Image 1 (tube, helix red, strand yellow):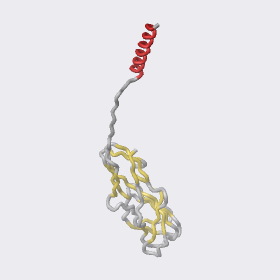
Image 2 (cartoon, rainbow, N blue to C red; image 1 turned 90 degrees about the vertical axis):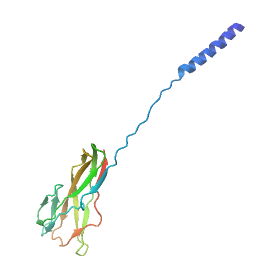
Image 3 (cartoon, rainbow, N blue to C red; image 1 turned 90 degrees about the horizontal axis):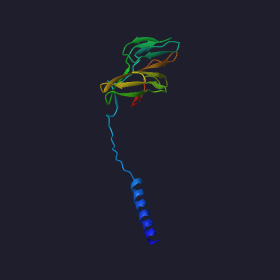
Image 4 (tube, rainbow, N blue to C red; image 1 turned 180 degrees about the vertical axis):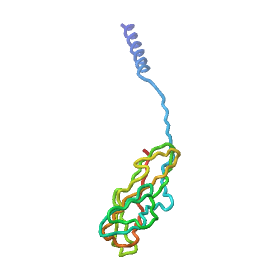
Length: 173
């Protein structure tokens, strides 16, 4: 019986050590990270979207400036003078990356700075080239922005502007 007990203790000890060695396993891993150049946007020149010199009438209308700088007046609006420009920006960052473009969605209000200060016009319908997304194939890309100016019937003469610039945002996708 003593021999049996000794055998039992030895067997239990062997099984205990065996279970421990079969129950554990170790592996190693590594960690990596890639940092890219931050995306950046800066205005070219004064970054101004300029609708040029216009003539109003008794009929409301709009004036569209496309991202390529072409102007299209409608209804009672007459295009009189030049100076028409789309806003232009340079986007830079990590080459070959795509990015999304966020344009203003709320009306951008221009106020007559030479009149009483109560006359306004809304700028809406911002559009860009590229439209929606761009690709930094060489690390930079020009982004042009146009919009639509909403002119009221008998709009009061004057120079209309806004002291707060409109925002164009870009984000890596």
